[in-house]
Length: 523
Ligand code: MLC
Ligand code: AMP
Image (tube, rainbow, N blue to C red):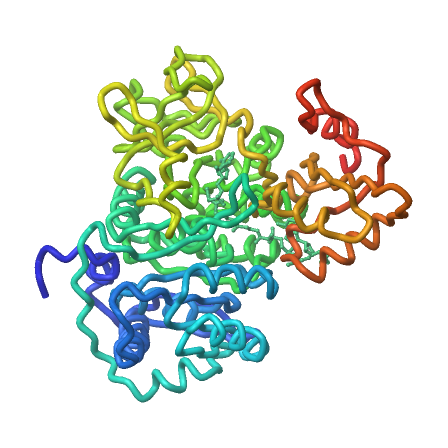
């Protein structure tokens, strides 16, 4: 092995404890039986899958697209993909056939792994797109992937990778409604993981409760890398359950969640100071954490949630301090309704619409740079160019699409988004995508989707549709039709039929008026 390899797996593997027989992952079967994986298990099982991938003789840079339920084996498949040097492409299990067809058509993966139940339709899409290998991976360690991997050796030398070599592609929607594949390298992921280990003060005896899905940045990268690069055990939950998460706190020290998870745990009487007394750190991100939730958590548990901010394109960007941050006058205060400071190595500026840097305290567009910022969108050089801007020194800044400000103490607050995006329970819903599907329905002249406050999901989508002359529309029927085409979390919670959409003098739909009209629907 070359010492200069920047393979992320190699770095994670190097952090495994010396005693490989210690428990690395603690989980349960669907019947509730305890299921333990040692560090040696992680090493050997990921080697087998890596050897299987290598045996397929797929070209370098091949994408491995994966749409499977959360399981330890799904994580091992991710680790095996890194190990073998291919590019991991995770897909939310809620995505339906039209969405999957687009991703597979766009990414042209050499290998697709799906659930046994979806093999029929997923393999058809994959083979039509030219994919040669489709495997299945089910719950309880079933499926053809592991059957084939069982015949492969359990020793594998990680592929030598440079910092700029691709490790993963994460699809993220855009203003046009078409998803773009954010290309992340081994260097992006590794630098972020190493920096967070230090910034969040990971300790030798930390134990992470892993309760998030593993097809997005938060559960896949921040949580898994965080634990592995510290050699820390994970308590692994296939699905978030507030009661189980609270019960696990007695044996754990770190929890990561989207705000909805905190809201749901707060609704449980079992959440007390005593229940959380073994915990060291609660981290929230992916969506705004309401100040009420932040305060209530402090009162109920005695812990101050550390809120941080990130994106698929950049992994983690800012964080409230865990300990004294010397760069900011030794600040240790975790301030609610802020996302803290730009992380070490991350550049962050706030600019006006012309791209001019704004003074401290003023609200504007957030742009970022750093070793964590992605390489661009997969096969979309023009889109990539549009999303970056240059400064007078030739610096390259990524336009986050988030609107915010930095106060005189250096704390960043996100106050809005210039992108037409709704974040519901931590999942992103792009208005343009849903509007596109609604507009294509018979009898629909046009439509608008807006986000409104929701007590559980933070924000949910509400659709307003306008009928073509002579057509009669039914909101419920439109919701039912959308359900057959799109991932469930993208479905508007309500659909209203109106006579017209409010427009300004330029003819642009005034979504702020719609948001205002429906803002009290759920709260
Ligand atoms: C589920 N439903 C949702 C929803 N999740 N509706 C809106 N928004 C959501 N997020 C709906 C389903 O459509 C379904 O409706 C019903 O709720 C029950 O579905 P479920 O799957 O049983 O829901 P549940 O298990 O309760 O899921 C809720 C959740 C989940 C909060 C646990 O959404 C979740 O895990 N969110 C985390 C997302 C995440 O990891 N984001 C990180 C992105 S990374 P019906 O009508 O069909 O019955 C990122 C970068 C960063 O943003 O900074 O981290
Ligand atoms: P994604 O594209 O799924 O990675 O989502 C990234 C977006 O989530 C960011 O651009 C923000 O709009 C939002 N986000 C992430 N963390 C936070 C946070 N702590 N507060 C507010 N918004 C957040």
